[in-house]
Image 1 (cartoon, rainbow, N blue to C red):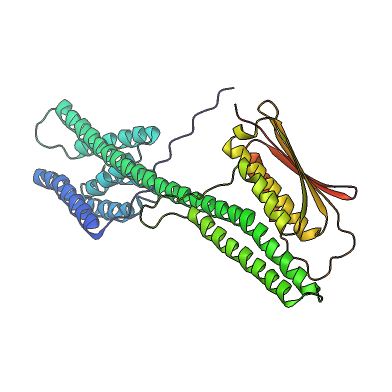
Image 2: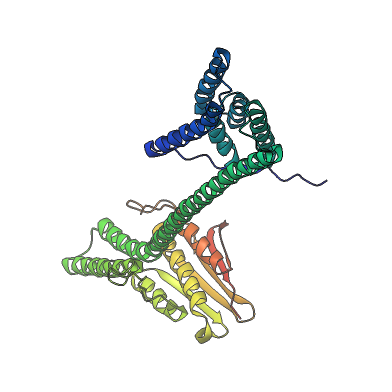
Length: 392
């Protein structure tokens, strides 16, 4: 079953300025004067009744034409009917006919053309002008009606063109604002992800060292100084990482995104070594077939997975042994698994706060690489497992 095309809806007419109203009024009065002048010159309307009919119909047409935008077809037909018996109504009839023609709806154009041409013919028969033959008068009426309709269609076409261009400009501006908004959201998401991946690990180390100092009451002055120095060192590293993360913001001079050194698979050993220096027991089992050939994006994702696993283990299971296993190669991709025992009892001192957004952001990061990330409690262990494909 074929669907009928929807009828074209004309754009709303623009508001008319004071100069526009004045110009239309002068044009309408001029047309009425020309039409009435021809009839008066012939002297065929000298009776009282004809004068009353002329004035009454003309005044009614001038009143009705003010509603041409609300009911264009009704006003156009009414004013043209009144113009059959009144030359004064010719001006409003022309204005109402042009108003209908601006809509450029075929069925309305046909109706108003027939009514306008018939009105002109009837008026010519009631007030004959000289000895001109009827075919000449009818031809003149036909040309005048076509000119009126053509002028109205031109105005409507130009009006619709300007309306379309305005709509396109507004749409383009809205789309530009949407693109800018999306770009800002993307930058903020990137900054938030980097800040969590980097700073959460550093601050967890600081919290772990500070918690150890808080619950130990058998430390000497030298050991306290060493612990404070370690906390200061980790805090400085956190500040350095913060400055690096903020490097993803746009440069003030060039406006371009400034990068920061990103970790690779080769930095995985240093990550584990730092965790061990901070007191976390970590067993690393690296069985990747070609570790030197791991692509940068793959290695960075694996690094972040291990970093998140070590951070969570330091937060929630301090003092336990964390097992990190990395396997795979170019054929099978890289699989990384971080396991740590569940904590037994409640650790002494306050626990570091956690929002749960780290694993969510890490899942999004892994999915962007075409991989997958799962985390679950496996009996007495907590397992974080990820797989990242090795691009060909």
